[in-house]
Amino acid sequence: MTDTAQLSLSGKTSEYPVLSGSVGPDVVDIRKLYGATGAFTYDPGFTSTASCRSALTYIDGDEGVLLHRGYAIGDLAENSSFMEVAYLLLNGELPGAGELEAFETTITRHTMLHEQLATFYRGFRRDAHPMAIMCGVVGALSAFYHDSTDIHDPKQRMIASHRLIAKMPTIAAMAYKYSVGQPFLYPDNSLSYTGNFLRMTFGVPAEQYEVNPVVEKAMDRIFILHADHEQNASTSTVRLAGSSGANPFACIAAGIACLWGPAHGGANEAALNMLHEIGTPDRIPEFIARAKDKNDPFRLMGFGHRVYKNYDPRATVMQKTVREVFEALKVSDPVFETALKLEEIALNDDYFVEKKLFPNVDFYSGVILSAIGFPTSMFTALFALARTVGWVAQWNEMITDPDQKIGRPRQLYTGPTQRPYVAADKR
Image (cartoon, rainbow, N blue to C red; front, side):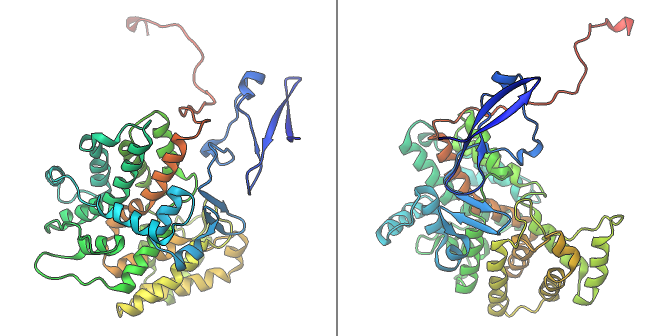
């Protein structure tokens, strides 16, 4: 027997079924609420509203759990590859050796961009933000790949999905190359997904680029850790755009635009800027005191999370990875020492413990990306590159969901009630 929830409003009681997922909170199905009561629910930010059914990603913020198709993010980051995780999110199961090889070959064959898109880049100013370029170029893909925009054709949907995953590293690398005035590099099919991206970003035609295996592994982990994160703002944007029947390239461009916001994709840049502002470990107590002062606008960036009320499981992997990168690249940076000391102090300070302000993935990712050589303007572009896998998987899931409808949130109207129009000469 299905549990029900009762709601009494204006002397009338109505019942609503309670739905249970495989794990996580139950959900009160209020689809018939307006018809039964004439009332809406009010939930700014949709923090207590399930907008869809999904079998992709599960988060338990209180326990610090992140699962992709049932697999813990720590296990995937430690043992898997980004391509394997991409296959998992798209298909529901980890691939066998033959399936993974076939998938990697498929993605590799789609990495090149239409040659006319190089001209498209030259329409941007040289100092354009990479995210502005990525929004434009990804949206323009639908003008070049007409053979994969029919969302009702499963084969076309899969081709579009593969194209987006494959071309995003090329698009991001070209955005970087354009900003520094260097020539674009074509993809190299002999390299891995991540190694190819590093070469297209940092290589030059004049000399052979050698992929550092430690850096390659670190970037692959970063991509895995950012691949999907349930119904966050950008993923919800992709689903909302997709609910109208928009083509997949337009939907992913919408996701990129949402991710660009500093409260979403720009958090790692803000965390790195904060560490630079602190400078050295001896100045940490001063900034800790400022963070506790309600009258001081300073806030510790990279601590706490909208969902996680415990240690971000991705941060654990990043802490290990940052050490490996710094050792491999022989980096001696006070910012890293400041980050470690700040984490140690915050984790043992009653103020932060009580408020559950634990380090999140952004706290370390900016430090790693900076050490590898990425400018801060590229941080969000790298996030978009990785999250494209999740966006594409979520979009595919939404398209095949029989309960899917065009997104149409309602509102609590607070404006004037109907009033008569008055001619201009009488106002």
